[in-house]
Length: 241
Image 1 (cartoon, rainbow, N blue to C red):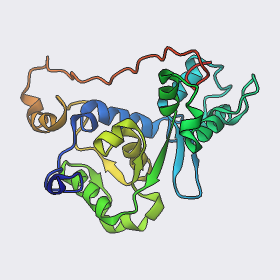
Image 2: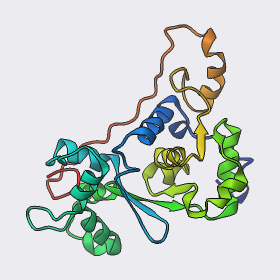
Image 3: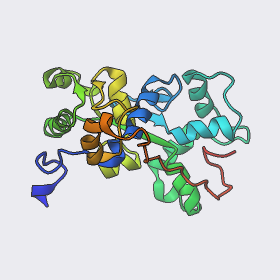
Image 4: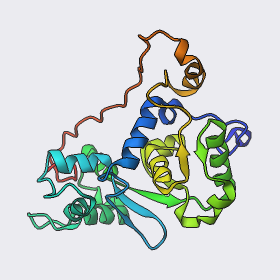
């Protein structure tokens, strides 16, 4: 397994279809550009890490709770850090308390409530390991991303590439959050392909996109993101009120 681990660039030069597709590039572009997104509804920590509200939580504030009075990052951060009307701690404070004592905090919760809290906030963490950073840089360059030179990337230290706690990153070692963060910082300056013309997904998309102009006009994107199921629990959580 050591010879085929995620840190072996000879084995892992390609990206999985879930983090290398037309839909993924479009999601990254929107998140990097939007004024209100997980990247802006966030809090920088002294350790260099960044705590941010998930897209699920941001959508929940808009759709299910009393939405912030203004559509800007400060208003959303305030909504997540102020005490709730029933006297409970803020959404962010409740989440942080759960992370300090997961077993004790979740003892009286059902599965749906635990899951809802688990996807309510995430951390971005600076990638400080040079070997891991070089592996990521090599993969990005190999599949066609435009990335700043590696020496300049090392010079960014805590302001460079970040790892993420979301499910996709834990599974694929890359995600929309860390990619969009790199775009906003100017680390990534171009995608491998134009999302509007990319056909297919994953490694197959890399091959078919080269001949996209020769394909039938009827060819269309067929990969769409999953819509998370709505939690059934009525207990307090950031997604419902």
